[in-house]
Image 1: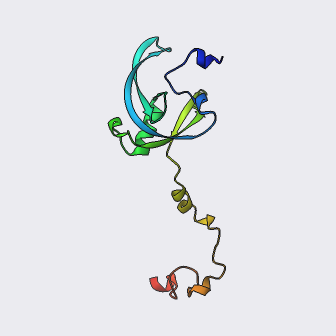
Image 2: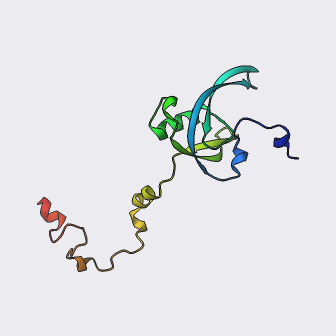
Image 3: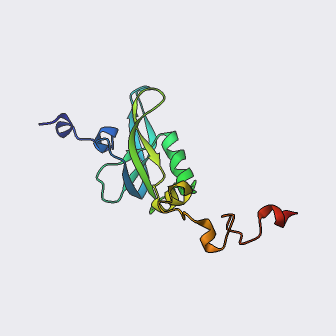
Length: 145
């Protein structure tokens, strides 16, 4: 039997992602009372529940700010329904963490890199645009002058 089965946790840990990036939908954000081993005191931290997941992600400040930036919503009450991508990472302090990133949008990636056009027109003059600038027969310098 694995140790994590002997001592199950409510919290999502980087190891649970198995090196994969996972896109999730936020279901709810709650405040949870947890024990801080550094201060040996209880403290309240935000925790995010995801649709279809059984574990909660306890947020640190970096993760909370990332979700606010990604969603464009600084009020956690407005996060449910928003999608983010989670992946295991190493924090600047050297500890394992979960990185919260925007969802990759294939359409945005395609438009963000116009060099990836797999079928460039080998003959730009064929479409009546001799200089290939998309401006018909008038050169951009001629228009400005």
